[in-house]
Length: 78
Image (cartoon, rainbow, N blue to C red):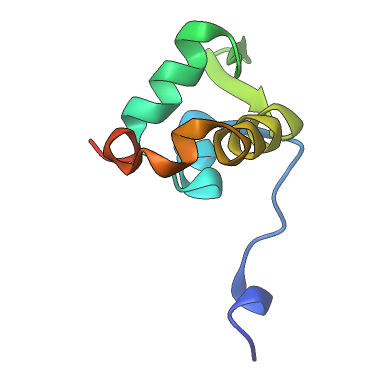
């Protein structure tokens, strides 16, 4: 079995914890995306669990690699 076979089938919307696992970015990077509106978490359900669209997470990751920020590894870590 390959490593890819053991990865989950990600849903279309993810909680922040799932989004961090999915993107593998730091909590600080996720906060920066939220602050500038690149990724929007919307409360859903009685408990108010916030979810974000996976396509928005994909776009934020892609933009990170397309920008000059891809070479500035200092911002990738907490």
